Image (cartoon, rainbow, N blue to C red):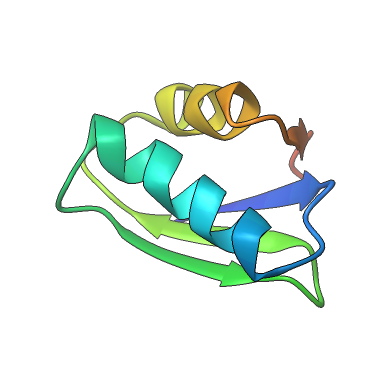
Length: 67
């Protein structure tokens, strides 16, 4: 499971947009959006950079991962 810190998400529409963007690239992806924490957890066969790219294409900023 890949976890991302994402800024700019504030509502259910944002969560749906991020989920939709990822699932357009991998329809079987499992996406869990935590709006309160600004985190997105993704279980997918997609490489991490491709998931980040999908989130950014939806209009949200993926913050660099903390180690």
